[in-house]
Image 1 (spheres, rainbow, N blue to C red):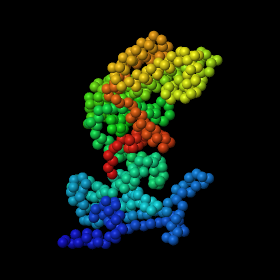
Image 2 (spheres, rainbow, N blue to C red):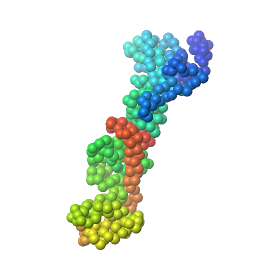
Image 3 (cartoon, one colour):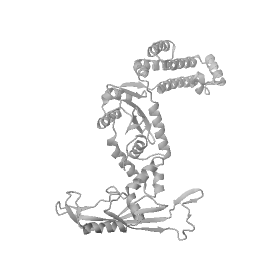
Image 4 (cartoon, rainbow, N blue to C red):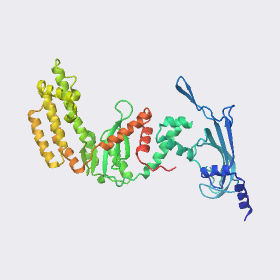
Length: 444
């Protein structure tokens, strides 16, 4: 055995069990060694006999500061070698200088842990470059270890970014950077080649008319999010779909609400897809028209009591109690126009409950003729729009999809926003939504 290998074995044998454990947790090879671990305590009265110290300080019931036991500094250096491999040309070269780098590590027993690493700088005579040896326990150009990143990602799964930053005693921008980096790194591995069903819905971001369109697939995962709610968002999704191995011709059904922008985008960018209007939004549109009729009657007949019947006429008959039924009977006697609109709305809901497409189509044509003959102008306008887009309504009988998937995802996204009390950065908002609801493969 050479003297060089004997010297390396001696270094390995001199390591304590604690140092070997630290090196194993950091996933460092035998080329590195732990020099020492220094611990300093912030509390002068701290002792092994009385280890309990307060971690949080409250003043008037409000959290003021977060205190830790102290700090732990682990010193690591590279074993002295005469030659190193150049990271650029793999030529053997020597170190001309050693620099010290500090990395934030996971907290240990309440101590803020830092790694102080001595890294050699190489002078390559072959390529003429001056390179610094990378510390394998951390990504390049960052000041924290991979184990710290794993801790951050684990905490972000259930806690807001700000709370995670306070808990780990780091800046919020560090948590943002970690989440964005791993989401951006995992997105190219997302495979959309088998995507055939698309669910589209929008969600409000911040205040005002700022919206984000959310796209999800048949597996109930968020695949894409983009600012805006126009037909151009469909085009941006199609471009992203092509980059991820999918093809717009493979999308054969799209579920969305009755927004004209989504309809125009599907017709333009997804020619093979069948657009299915969501049944919930169909009933919602009828209820909105019914409420519009009630408001118009309220303005014309100010002396009548129409202010307390809003939810009576919007409620399904099977969900009415005795008081609602009494109010409905009174409406039929005093406000026949509103009662007729209510009956037309319920007849339309019964058509949607039909299980056979041909029977539903026949009943819809009869309902349309009834509305155009006896209905008011508001109901006629709605029935005319439904007749022009009857294929969007009847498509449900062939595909049996609705926007419940998108609404469920939007509900979870709203909980994410409420948990963090809102997001000021759109990029951070999209990153955390894709991280939590995109089922990405995150590798650290």
